[in-house]
Length: 185
Image (cartoon, rainbow, N blue to C red; front, side, top):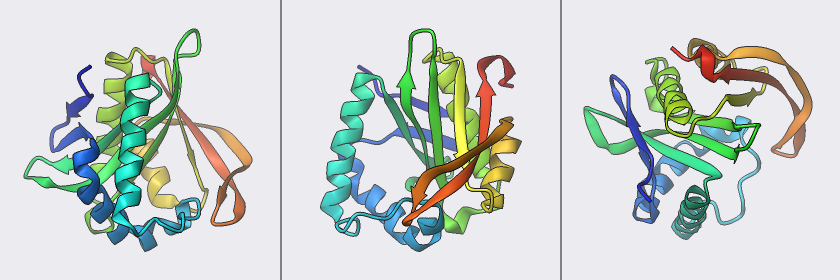
């Protein structure tokens, strides 16, 4: 099975494999404090390179099962350094044909439009290649940058999910956004 990959005007979205463990470790750890307000509590071994290698083994398995697509995001002008990730998880086929979206952009690459560009490119891939009908994203209301990125990518606000995810020991409300296949540009 060929692993998913796609591109946009400025970005390369490439499936991560076990050999990318060092790169994933570097991306996640240099941004750990920046991502912390929006993330579940980090496991005890999160700052250990082996944690990320094991995580990539699980990710590869989930990709092969068809329940996950995870892209590393790279600039076309600097394709060696991972600047973000776009993850489509809990892929359900059948009559539902839906998944959840998660995304992160490096703290040093903010306000350049990379998040919305990566979200658009990844969503287009999921609709075209995986034939999904619906992609859902959930965002903590105070994460204004994430809200702007998801809206710029064409997602529509559907409502609030009360106490949706446990983020750093607190059950946080999340805003629920959706993009349908028929709405993609």
